[in-house]
Image (cartoon, rainbow, N blue to C red; front, top):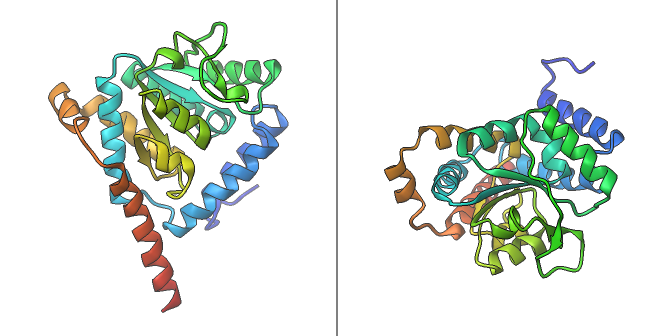
Length: 243
């Protein structure tokens, strides 16, 4: 039992949930390593949503609202961390949700689909095709889902797949705590924030923005500004720690 007054309560509870999901076949063991890497960057940013990330989350909502065929791509880590929040975002923006895995097996895909459905997420299903120019399983996607999407939200994404989607002319919204990753640098818009902090903010903006506001926000932005904001905060905190 983890006491609620423990200074690392939230982080420890997340780790416990991830461990259970790994035992249940939702999360791959490699996904645990990926989570720890992201958590290290969260430490460096003070475990809070930066102003630059908050603005990126608002723009992400605008992009989803203005999209003709928005899709949320969900992997094992995203399902384990935020199944209920994915449900809320789907309801707010009307996006399709597609499960897409790097460490893919038919059994694991079904486990994640079942888990998401139990949490109220509506999952797009069908026959996956190799539609992306990649040599691994994440090239497989649904033609009526990721294959035809104009805007894709890709939380906790692989860098090569993010780059492939962007190269196909799709608007790619990434959620990634590492502002130096290939994903962060190749996405159309990068939200440098922790997943379970970012999703509720995007959902709230999806509900609150009117059509004119959404069109205005989605009209033009420079992703380098959001990456620079995170790097500046990391630099500031490191310099302060050394004082």
